[in-house]
Image 1 (cartoon, one colour):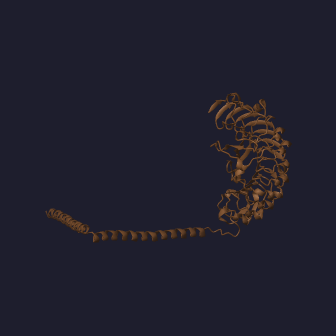
Image 2 (image 1 turned 135 degrees about the vertical axis):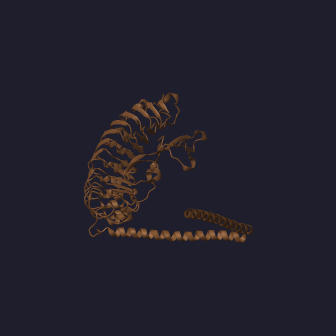
Image 3 (image 1 turned 30 degrees about the vertical axis):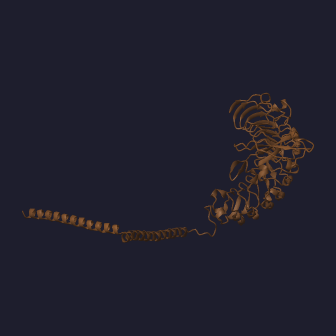
Length: 503
């Protein structure tokens, strides 16, 4: 659908949940009733202009606001209300993140990805202690990463500050994020060392129950901290499930108070909002939604980090991807890196790492992407089916590194190439002998089946036997006649030639 939307506050004043996402609507954002609308999904359209429409009619009961992937401009208005989900990703917003955002005490998802926000993170953001998903990537934010993120947001599972202008060090307080699953600080100007307390990130050390809760945030539409709900007196029914990779599923809960009749039931609406984020790992960038809770990723790539890679990082036993590329790390690769049995992607390229590749790296059986290029590594690449299966580009730029898959041979390796050739010839001979053996066996079996098939039929069926011998007699007679006729013709030709010579 396309076109400009009318004023919904007048035409449809009783709409509770509005989902017009994934269309071609354009023009300014339409007005909606602030008294009844609790969820508004307008993502993936072509809306333009400022997003100050909410200030025209007050806060209301709106709890879910998704305006992502539009053409909206300007700044975030100060009257955003007490939202549970605010998704303004992939627009053209600018200015500073308003301090009023700290008044959203029930905020669980905040996505401002791919805009032009500037300045530092507002101190009031620390009041959003219920945050689970915080994506501020691809903006123009600056300043130091505040340590209060680790202290004030205990439920945080996704933190992405990628592609900004943050500087300073990685605050050790981030180690308090025991529920963190994705920690992306890449493409900034962060310096200093990696805190040694990373093994306190519990969700990366042991399995947790975050697979469902991260992908689907339950958001209460009408906050009232004094009302309690009993499982015995509640029921819910899903009303809508979008097929475009986003899940908007409202649930209506009704509770019966002891002092009320059945007619005086009051309603509350919960929403399960599916978070989405672009994650770079395995050498590419993909978007993850309903499987987001299965990931365990640390990405500190392309900063100015120094020092050694801390040994404590090898204690993150559930880690799936580790990207420390494009920094200034020195020292050796941790010897216990083989403990990361779940690791699928490892990028340590573009650093100043030295020493040999730990032999324990051969134990990373799930490793699908590896890049150790452009370091100062030396010695032989450990022999394993896993490491030798990678392209040589994963090890280039290490002048003292040798062994397969590199062409550079290690000292002591044989330089004569004839043994491999002989091995290849012997292999070909073995294959040829094996082929001839099975060919002869097949011929013997085929002949036996044919012979006994025909002979058995002739012995058991008298009519076939008579027809067979009659065929042989007639064939012999036909052959005898043909030979006799041909012989007589040749004799006449020879006699004629002999008479012609005598004459």
